[in-house]
Length: 413
Image (cartoon, rainbow, N blue to C red; front, side, top):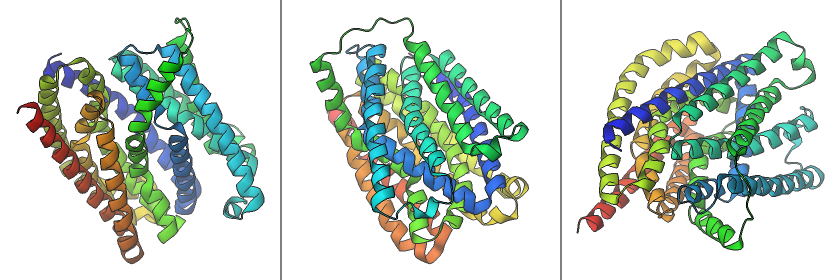
């Protein structure tokens, strides 16, 4: 595949991801206006804990399954059965853990003002939808089915908008927590897409050597996948610990702009993983460098645009309660671009069978961010969290580029 074609298709992926980000912004506006900074913070804290728990218990199996599918070592239907079986075990472990926390500790006492059964339902839905959505997106991009990926994004967004209508037009808010409805429709869409993907395939027995290969690769790249999730949410755990949930609610709105910017490198990195698996290393190096350059150019353009746009947008949409999110939002935009420029290197390392490299970088990156947060958040609050994110992005990008340079020197020696 020519680099020009790759960039064109990756840009198409970015446009589709833009639809999802618009929906994500609508969800942010919905929750912020419905619950204010405190409620928004509680929502972000809960979803972050759930997503991290889900990825911890998935053991890195999602990336491994997609890798094995690309190399024709396992069928898609086998992968889905393994993934769902794995999730069922994770759900059981989660339920036992929740019951233990309720009965033997007071860690959940702060959320007892909500209906505990609704919290458990919401937890389980988030727990299921996280690996499923990651698998669907990674699989469709890896096989280059951009059309199906677009349909998946659109269907997901339509379902969430339908959830909004259920909340506003019905009496759901009084009977069921509105966030439960939004997550339920998201989960339902993912199950329907999974069913569609495997509907025409015949299941064959899953062999022991297949499971051994899958979990061996998964565990090698486990820390990298876990690091990626934690890196995107570590502030959501640190801010309530070092400051309070109200501040987290404001910071999460600033992080909305980080999430928008990061869709640019995510679109390219997600798509080129499948391309890297099919090409020779010399061509992959050229593609990686060109994509990194393109991400940098687009990022710089976005910086100029967003610095003029963020101030007015935040006040207009979220209100004066969230005005203190303006400055950290600008820092987080820069952080997202710095972090995103090096993301294609991660995809390259996974594609050439070196998942341990992103894992090492992830561990060091998370450690540096946590240290900076403990130093900066107590003193500078929300700005300290933003600067910690920027510091971590710089550190991770430097490490990725260092590994990439070593790879280049070894390849051309």
